Amino acid sequence: MKPYPLLFKPIFKEKVWGGTKLKKMFNSAVLDENIGEAWVISDHPNGKSVIENGEFTGRTLNDLLRICPEWFCNSHMVGFPLLVKLLDSNEDLSVQVHPDDEFAVINEDVKSGKTECWYIIESEPGAEIVFGHKAKNKKEFIELANEDKWDDLLVRISVQPGDFFLIPSGTVHAIGKGIVLLEVQQNSDITYRLYDYNRIGLDGKKRDLHMEKALNVIRFEQDSYNERQGVSGEN
Image 1 (tube, rainbow, N blue to C red):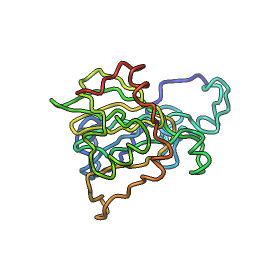
Image 2 (cartoon, rainbow, N blue to C red):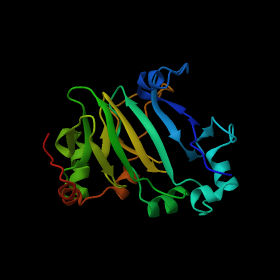
Image 3 (cartoon, one colour):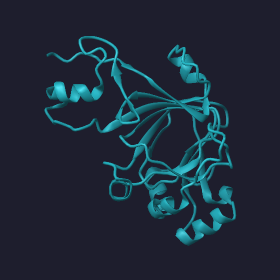
Image 4 (tube, rainbow, N blue to C red):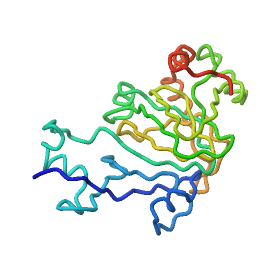
């Protein structure tokens, strides 16, 4: 069968930090108020994209991989390797890090870690992201984190529409409030939180942190990485 442009039904994810912009963007009647993410292309177990047009209406992206491998260069992929999202940060996201492939496969029993990239679509005045840290080594990182000196530890960068950021696995990062962005990432949903503002989750409980695992995957050559990316530690 000849390939045709596919439309997928967005998968909305309620988040404690989410807002209403994605509902408006998709003209959606979904009832949840705090929509933080819309998964627009996904073959992840936590949300599989369903086709909304043409002959394959009602089929998932994974179905298409099996039915029409020629559409994917006859690669015979078991699963689609990317997950594409839109995010609306009505509040700051947690400071977090993702594992690389090796750590994720060994310790989480999944197929990949998570490297991602962001394209800023909208940003309110003064909006920032966290992109890396200033600690020289793990010992200094732990000391500053234990003392809650996050402002001394984290690299914050002002953003504006059109900015693009590559976030390799192992990079400490966070999306600040007032940002809508497009995220393209490896097909993984593993996140290790380091700091979350003592926030209460949607379930009414304090959200978990994952400091031990995070410390095992954080890059501590961050300064050299920032230099390669042309990123400064100053706001």
